[in-house]
Image (tube, rainbow, N blue to C red; front, side):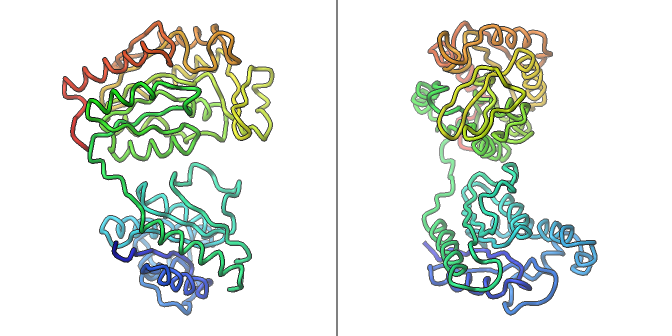
Length: 413
């Protein structure tokens, strides 16, 4: 392929040596670079391709306004806004192929905004002194973000710093060389699932959808998967969504870090994408298995999936609350919505004899759906477990009907 063009973003006033070294490493790896200066204090030794004044202008202010904005936090927030707008414009115009940002906490704060402005599939590497730190809120991290720890790089271009810089430059250039931005040559059905042991419907649905001319993309609803799903839905990339694993919504309600943010279940609806929805795995709140179970759920049935993630069952009141939250979100959808309610179970661990079996809680949630305002929402209640054949058959019946009626388009979006 042609030499990939990497947008290097950093504060030229304080990190000229590091940015210059990054530029050299990008060239050595076979790429080209465009440097964007987001510093505001002074000029550095590197001449940027995009000046700090241009960044400020993109944010709707002058550089002097940024300098006089009050403090470094407000100044960097303005520069983050301008840098994000410019990065998105450059990518849309085909003038950059990847992103490389470096910084400490201040630069990383800005980097998360800039990286989030670019679509899924565009390589994004952040070289940060706080890479993978608990300081980084999951809801600000793009699902495909790559991070490299800037070890020993806070001040001075020493050998440790050079090692990290070279690794980051090689990572982004290499990613651009082999990247395959999604082409969406066939219409795509976006589906959610909580792994393949808890929820299994995709095994039978995939060949059926392929036979009908649709690709299937399944997203793992452990926080970042849900964010990727919502991002693509909000961009209108799906012909239909089969959103059957809504446990991230319950995690949000329960205060778990394993969530996809408050906008979960909203992207497809706002875009008018046809939605087939089921309350899969909504009897659970996830938490890190290496940590403590949230105190409010003490004494509830639990299941440790592996050494990373564990789940605890929620009570009847929370199940009823979820039913209303789900319906309220679905009623905001601009396209067709069908809610499938499998009344014999919503995930594999809730079967009789399994650790999360709670028939009273399941019955309470199903009962509460009947008390919700379901105006504008098609509803199917089936005497089946979500992982059994009748659920798949009902989903396909809805899907085929919508295709026949022209509600689901058989051409790529």
